[in-house]
Length: 215
Image (cartoon, rainbow, N blue to C red; front, top):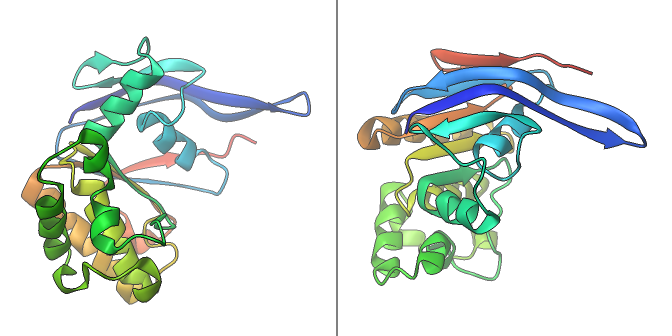
């Protein structure tokens, strides 16, 4: 997926004080590229990812996905686009504790009413190296395994854009590096466009967006 970000700004009010989180940010990404988003805490990295992921709307500016703007779309249209086109992995895995790894991975397909939900979910667990843990619940998995389940869930619906917000932040260095290598392999294999927020200089890719703290 190609992305074009044009003059994006985001602010909010806190006790009648205007807080500017993002101001006039512009950038572009070609389909299949990997981008690292870096900057100090509070510089708007996660906010930018949420805007791109249609989890929030900018105060001004525009985002185009393969040349298409969603600025006039309804919430339902945003949700449909998000479910079909975008995968998310956050610092915390956000797996549902009462469901197995297989059931967690299949959640996006449940909303699509995909008849092959179970088989596709099993295939993705195999691809992230957890084919033998499909019936385990999150509490029975290690931190790295939980994040691999989250990655499989993000990719099971075959999105074109993968957004990663500190995906290794809760992992030790070795486990985190393994997760990033897996993401890089899947990027090359699937041609995904990948954006990753990170504070770790060892995980920075060739293309970097550096955000400045506006506070």
